[in-house]
Structure formats: C-alpha cells, structure tokens
Image (cartoon, rainbow, N blue to C red):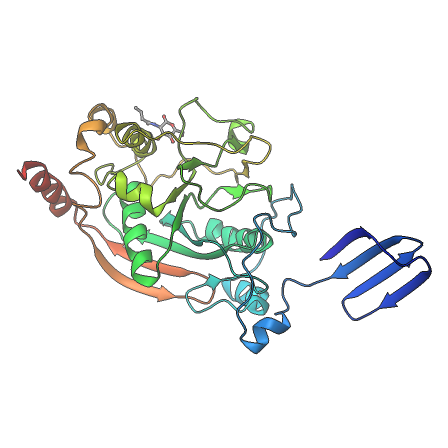
Length: 336
Ligand code: BGN
C-alpha cells in the first residue's frame, strides 16, 4: 500500500533519500514522502512483541468501491490465500500493524449454501483487513430436518461466539450479501445499524422503508437489552421485522450508513425450496412487542452437535427441538 505525505521542511536544497520502505524527496522548502507498507507484513514492533499502537479511527487502506467476483476454487485454496495474514485457528483475523478497537464476530445463519459460503469467505476478509478490523466469521448451521429458523441461529451464534472470546460487536449477516464499498465500516457504534441499504436484487435499494434485514450490526449491550431475537420464526419471513419491533420497545432506533456506502452485491438465485414461508409470521409479528421479555436469549434451547474450528472460520452445527424450544418460551412467559 503506497502512502504519500507532504510537509514543509526547513531544508532548502534538493535531496532524495531512498530506504527499503520509503522515498523522501526534499525540494526547496518541501518534503514529500512516499511510504510503502504491506498489510501482510508484520511490523518490527510486532516481531519484537512490544505492544503496538491503537489502530487509527480511519484506516489508511480504504479504497472505496470495489467489485464482487464469484470465486472459482475450494476452501483449501482460500486457506492458502489467507495464510499470509496468519489467522488463529477458528479464523480469528487481526490487523498486523495496530491494535484494533473492537472485537467483531460475524454471525451467519446458515443451511445448505456451500457456493455462497465460499464466495463469502473469498470476498469478506480482504475488505475487513483493509478496514483494520479484528474479526471472526461464525457459520451457524442448523441441522436437518427441522424447518430453518434464522433468528434462532442468530441467538445461538451470539451465545456460542461469546464462549470463544469476549466479542464486543456482532454483525448478523446473510451469506448471500456481499458488501462492495470499503467505507461501509464493519464496526459497531452505540446504536444498532442496518447496513444493507442499497441491495442489488432490489435495484440497489430496499423493498420497504422499515426493512431491517440482510446485515445488521449490534454492540453487545444492545443485544442484552433486547433479549436477543425471537426464537419462534420457523421458515421464511418476518423475523427481521420482529428485530425492528424489539428496538422500539427498549426505546432505540437503528441507524444506516449512506446508500453510497451500504451497497451489497447479491447473486441471483431462486427462493429456497427447503425454506417455506413461516405461516404464523403475521400473528407472531402482531404480538412481537409483548414477547420480547420471554422469547429470546432467556428462553433459547438448542444443542451443539459439532464445532469445527477451520483455518479461516468457525463452523458450528446446531440441533433444534422445536417442541422443547416452544415449551421453554411458554414456561418463561408464565414465570411470575
Ligand atoms: C418481507 C418479509 C421480510 C423479508 C422482506 C424482504 C414478512 C412479514 C410479513 C408480515 N416480512 O415481506 O422478512 O426480509 O420481505 O424479502 O414476511
């Protein structure tokens, strides 16, 4: 990455100084410095183990808009591609040149989307590294045969990620949405943030004003306030609208990045045959504001069937017993 800086100098002659990582030109009273630094190469400070300075508020590596490319290759190819960034097992990536400000867990509710997952894993890390973010991608896969429950997988992802490390920021992410602007920063502010505001499949817009799906960022404190998310939406639709209702109950509003930044590419695919519409979503949504206190993190029930700490991400397999879960929510409701 080439950086150019300028300052006024007290030296009035003409001199060029060359070193391995920079060229400094003194010309009359001007000093122009060209510095080359590679994100991939650890600094001397890091090699020596001396604490490194906090990352700047704005990363110097941001390039602005960039393009989504479908990745032709395997997970093994990606493991090799990212080896130079030295992720810890389970896929924890850290900027090598500075101390990041937040620990980010990206939670992907997942079932049966291998191709999209490979594209996601190919697309995301380079952008997040340019943003100088510390992050881990958690893929939360719901086992067959129960109907898919996206918001439940978000609750599970939150709880399971916290068992691995003290993450302060959580981004809940559809596997088939790919950000295409570096300035859409993957960090949490104090407010929850709806990040997917210019989505390709809706002509780089959103389907309705209150849409709150696709990609949302939550600081840990807000998830605690809303009791996480609803456990009851089995099937497609409504669970993201439910998240929005919860925020209103605890007196919070979500924010959005400007549409030029919150842009997402989306691959074309037909509606999931394996994920039928949730027939009770209208009834659930009507009642969303009342359920927040007993339907969420405090009543969730699930079993972890497998945790796979892969080289570049963590894959957690979850078994769901719908009856047990619904009973648990009901029990919580009746608690005095
Ligand atoms: C909406 C769905 C959302 C979905 C968007 C975009 C519902 C609830 C109806 C009362 N909401 O219609 O969940 O993200 O479409 O596809 O179905």
